[in-house]
Length: 446
Image (cartoon, rainbow, N blue to C red):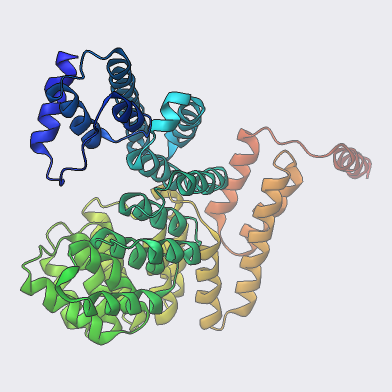
């Protein structure tokens, strides 16, 4: 009890809350303890117990011990949940399982607080898969039951969660329900709109934020979230305002902010300003290069885009899938067919998986150049690749795929497919093998 008394004294001294009505006797104290007060309120009750001489009452003492134990238990659960939430998507299942165990505990259920729900929602958002999505919605329902769903911390986590799931309508509903919004609330919703392609809504929300005046002003994160939306929706005025605001507030133009500014000025047609920002960017990471490559490509400067891509590789900066989309689009807009196909062919060398968007870029590249037959041939190869995935053990699929590469003059790719067939031990179907053996025997007799 003495240790808890010292703790309650520290909490009381550090608290800025206004004192609440004090309990009059042991019955009042026990009743208050059964209402599951938080740590600050419990410290006030404990201090009153000590100063009122109720510390010797066994029912009061038992209630205090039990309540402090519950809060300590909740703290430990929250520490573990926070650790899983910070560990990334690979630990989301462990976080959900831990929360389920906590919720099943009678003591912990009563003690779950806003931090508990914030951490588990963040873990579900980090996972981003269907299972985590269902778990996150279930947690939201529990938060509503616990009366913490509109808390600013829980609300912010839910906005980010629903945005990650692509449900911007649910995210906006939570956002609107949080009364005491902070800048994180606004940033989460702006980013949610921008990341899901709702650029106009993101810009409109930025305007609403500005109308609020000094109560909630944009910060560095706001600009990073809003600038891509400004570029996508051609909101020139808001984009230029964001740059001037960053200068006025002396925000550091790091790589994240530089990428957004480059995209914004490119959308305005001011490539010279975009390039100046690129040249002044401190780190010039892959995202900054991709933004500038995209800027050149969208204005028909394919050669400059390719040169910048080669410079990036020379500096040892690894491209990602988005970067390849920018380069391939730049080649398509400038008619650089052979260069684009060579870039496409190097994706595997950089460990980047070819996705549907990259194949679409190549089709666009060939189509814009009027090479429709070549585009159709490329589509046939893509179809063969898909069949190979479905029937990886069939050597006939590999042979057909290699022949398509041969017909298109892609002999290196044809050799790669044949080596793949050997490495994977693919076999010809029995019927084909028998027919080929019969044909070989007939040719020998002839």
